[in-house]
Image 1 (cartoon, each protein chain N blue to C red):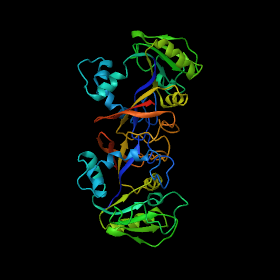
Image 2 (image 1 turned 90 degrees about the vertical axis):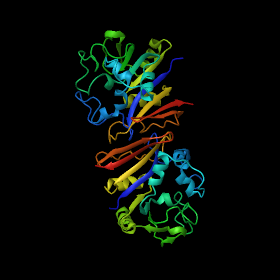
Image 3 (image 1 turned 180 degrees about the vertical axis):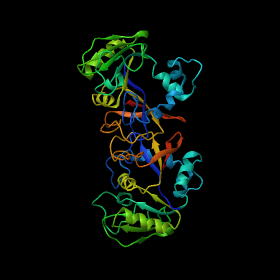
Image 4 (image 1 turned 90 degrees about the horizontal axis):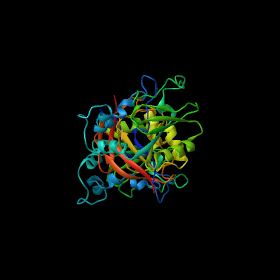
Length: 215
Length: 215
């Protein structure tokens, strides 16, 4: 059965999903790039960058690859698709990823700005959903056609889906970096009360991977 | 030179230093015991419990042992010494640890309740400090006589010392447990702005150990 999964979502030691002062030039925020060191070293990431020869195997790679396995659709918060408010909405904006985004499936973008679907190369179509997280969930589940739906973030969007009881599983990577401020994934969300417990714990040199699932 | 160090302070994946609903029967709060699994398996802990034959070596043990190395004094928040409000202050309360506490050095307890020093077996004397964190710091530093001072917790006490700029180093162990609520070590404290960065990262099966030091 289809599940809604958070995959490869990386947080700092102090629980932040992105650094402070995100901008068009620096979409991950200050020091946000350090967060994703574990992912940048993997074969999966290097393949996404077009280089088949680079990247390491091992648990980091295993989690990176699982993040793209059996996916039929994605859901993205508005800020995952475009830069800070004021620079988007603008229909010329086509996302961070160029002409061929690394999704290759339907992607449902939460926004307050209606916009026609945007078909990109390689099988990715962005659908702009203006009627809320449940609508995006229903549309994504239908589009996924039995496969899983990956919830890409950001933190506020994940928290909304968690509180609505719609998330089945989360893989988090905790990186050895302090960010100090930003959006805290754990603030105001009581994961055990929502039914989650830690079912996998795989630490590596670059990150501590945990899988949180509902009982 | 003497430093003020937080050592072996264990937090959950979601950043909590103790579980909810702490009580006399359950001083670590619900599920708080799961937090300290990494420590309970170490030779250092088993020796504290009086069993020299048990416990494992390895990185968990290395960090546990470092927690007691070169210590001349401790500082404890009030709740580390006694149970929930209403059951202490009472001068018959001598701490959680029986007649011979595992400190063996002077221990400065922050409290609003004046009380004469309490000399225990094995070299531990509890001093009750009613005039604030700086006073406890000065007294502990002097008592430590060139060795380090360990700041035992809890979360609120560590945050007060962090904000006052008095903490030099923290070793945190992040356990693969979700607590969901309680006191968050990271909430409202911007560690990079206070000068901290992650200088060691040693993950094990039971916990991710990180050392945070000032630049």
